[in-house]
Length: 180
Image (cartoon, rainbow, N blue to C red; front, side):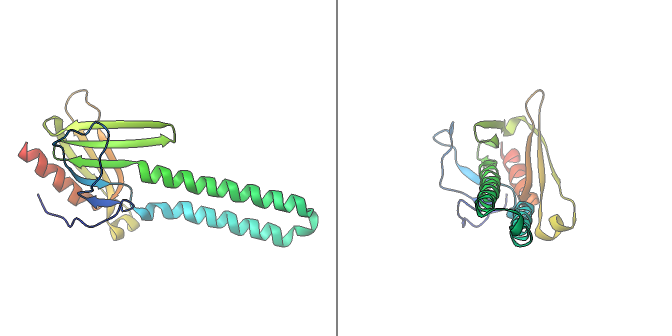
């Protein structure tokens, strides 16, 4: 198993040995790696928001004669609130969808909405296969991809989507499987 630098903050998408705790963590369990989707995957959300703001600016510029001042203010505030809400929920989804690799197990935390969380756990003795899939021009340049952890029997499989350095994460999991 390779050693990694332990630098990083909680906003990083590849965080080695974070000093955080999670629910159901045992006393002797140590978090070795915490991953989330690569930040570059969020560019589409930012680009879409920018397009909406440009469209709003064009509506204000070209159609201001057709609306009253009150209607323009209401339209602007409505669009700004919708776009900021979209950005906020996208950030929350990115921030709270985590992959946690400990010395005992692999954990996938998925938040699909603000009020719904799904946690999948696989202990190393139940893991059958670790598959890395990367594809596309941007993923090749920036080095992000997907990891699929297949478990034995009826256990749930784990997926880490669009994470940075997927081959290094897979090497870490494989090294821990060999130790167990």
